[in-house]
Image (cartoon, rainbow, N blue to C red; front, side, top):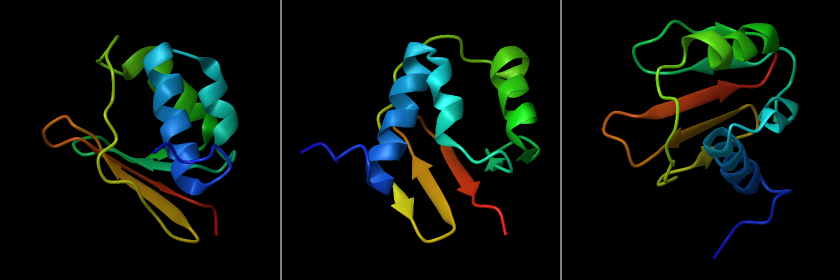
Length: 94
């Protein structure tokens, strides 16, 4: 069953669909003060740095994410996908 797009899980899945399609609409899903954490990388602070990460620093050019363990609370989402050691945490601004 697919989560509706207006739920936290639906937004998580929409983000990964945008990433896999290299759709810049992914940036519209985030607050300008995003804090984006990826294992093995420094924390990305703000939408400008988030955009720069995808434009210049992201190593994977093409692929497909399999969202296995989405988690969300009032202030953050965290996701594990099907890649070994792959996860993401996004914090809402305070």
